[in-house]
Length: 225
Image 1 (cartoon, rainbow, N blue to C red):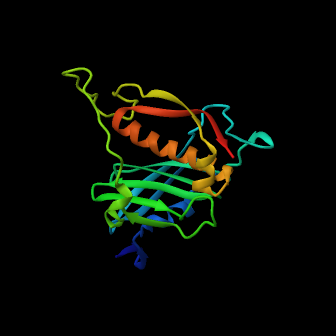
Image 2: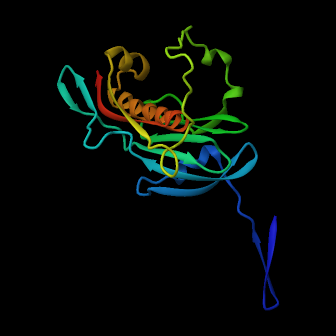
Image 3: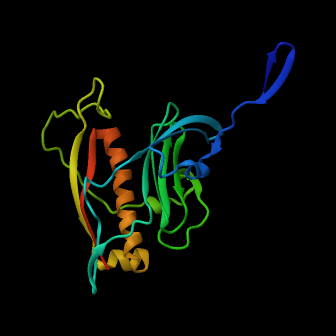
């Protein structure tokens, strides 16, 4: 669509803003920025999105790698983690590292997975795929059971905290993996495994903050090599 602007008889035609593809959003998120405003195309519609850089690790926390040579700080590959918010989406998150890209964005039309392929390997092209288009076997989980412990208990109304809502509760998490996590999923790359653990914790935080008003802070992380 062209918008015509008249300046004293001079007609200037300018193109209306066009949203960036969802898979290209990572190209606009710089580590030096704390917040980025974008127009993103989601399911064929241009949607305003605000990306805010967030800290998943607790203050002063240094992820560790432990192996035969001892314990050392993990190399997270310049990892940055971002929440994605806007009037046309319910929630979203993305982690960007030299080891990989992983995230999601949920809109009223469905959920999109943002990925650059297997984490820790040669990073491929970033893609955004609707979960509806993925094989159903990816979502098959072992059976589980939940039980009501307090009859008549009513869950709290979801709120992201602040404003008139309840203050957001913080749950401190400590994570330690075994060598199988590193070997089987990341082919022995403990640094990639560390960055992924931080990223998945950030994605969980976005979901829990939105749905249950609980934010996770990763207070300890050690990956066994």
